[in-house]
Length: 307
Image (cartoon, rainbow, N blue to C red; front, side):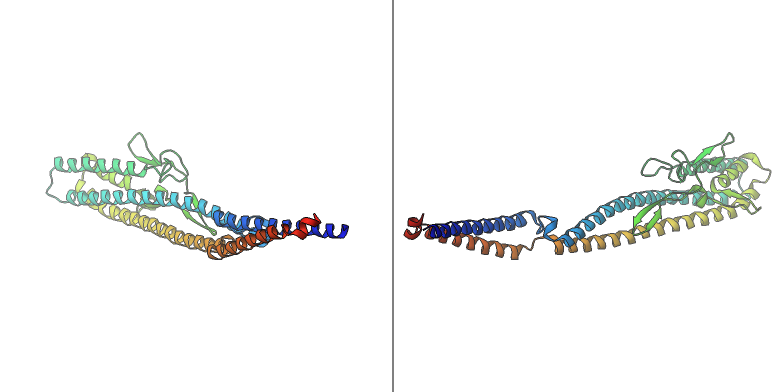
């Protein structure tokens, strides 16, 4: 009798264990469907879990690179816009210099042209002191204040740093976020030294306002310098455009890598909805059948008698 009782107890214990396991499996499958992940714990698949953590870190770093790229793109776009405005101002200065080089203008007319040139010089200084997306000097390198200041004589002097910082874009790539003023505003003066666009325009403006005995000759001489300055400025714009294109290339690469990571994450850890639903239905069916069988067996007279 004791043996039969022990067998009955073992039957109930085994049945409860099996039903509990089926319920746990059903709950786990339901959790995978609601949470979207087939890995409840790292122990479910240590290798896959480790790779998923690595992919997550890479995606977080990609977010930082994306923010850097966004800042660099904003600063370079601002630089391109400022340079375009400088180009327009310089083209106007060349037009005025061409007019002043003619021999038919009166002194008053040349003086008026000189006034406009000095206004252009002021505009160039203002554009050279444009701000980046953080409110710092756009063309001042790492300087937070102005890139240029005016001395007592109204001449622009560069007060920024020698170089502009770069921003990382991921995978060991980076981009310089702007240019320093001297990199695109300064050029050789033909006498072994350096000058810049603002000094050239100001010198011509002063000459036309009575600063020289031969204003027409000064205007003619300034045309070559203005063209050299325009070429230097155009080269600077080309550099900026190349950097903007590089940001776009690295951005496309970043998107492609993010897509690949997302696909790998899905393959490693995401729930396969169709197969999981099928397994859940199968598990619930077996659970329901097990519970029904257990109830019937438990109510048999033999088991009732043994209990």
